Length: 357
Image (cartoon, rainbow, N blue to C red; front, side, top):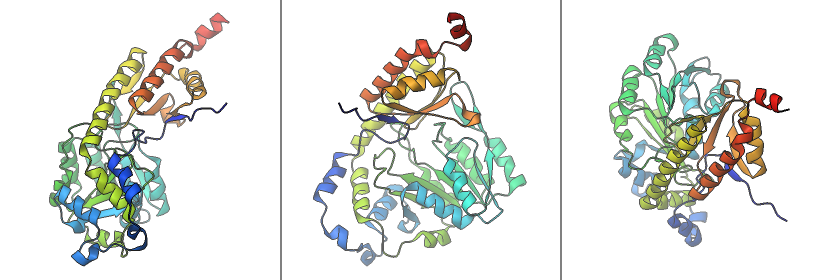
């Protein structure tokens, strides 16, 4: 008998899948998209997608950069701006890839603090600003929402940072933007005021096209050299562009997903908090939960046996924590039910187990 496919709550992928319009692109794609380079240059543009994004964000199309997801542009930026021996500032709890790409160029990674409270993580903005004098960084990298903590940086706090680091490239990684219904999207306007700002978005998360590998950045007016460094003379993947355009033209579909995820986040907070765990508020497609450490091995085994794969951290500073990606409504309900059923056995403290034995 075939075992059902596991449900991956550890990958931060959007299990609802892309909008129907994206699938239609695949079914109806003209062969010309395969054998011809883009013809957008005839109109003086880079691509149809960058034109659309320039209108969406109300910026010059020359300040829109396309890439192989956020990953690609992150690597380009670090390789371009960070000199050997120079410091890059990153959040204290963040994606391992930030350090990996700094290592590639001999950069020095220094963490600025994220502060854990009872129900959320927060950026320590004052400390980050003070670190400029000590470290004189070559680049500052901020993630909002941040992975794995799920917290965002409020716009006024971002402005404070940008004022302090006016002469430093600041990269705002917004790969997880859009998972809160009704979010105000006005970050591109900051690239007019702060010429060293780059903000990044991807089609991998909310738009459910991680396998397509496409993302973009909007850069400040002072980063023309970086724009040339990232330019692709022969254009980009034209099918990926068409899929991205179809996603952008399907706002109702993705607004519905964002609303569902927001509702399911609240349900997860309640279940885990009722069990006595810390569940940190998130604006991404995942939540971070802190368990008593003795719970983890038994709970993980119970979930694994049912094909419910959750990312339990093994790093020393994050022992007892798990990042739980949101699935569909039905998948999330299945996970919570499994946790609640496993909890009586998993939550027994070692002393209680010894007494029972």
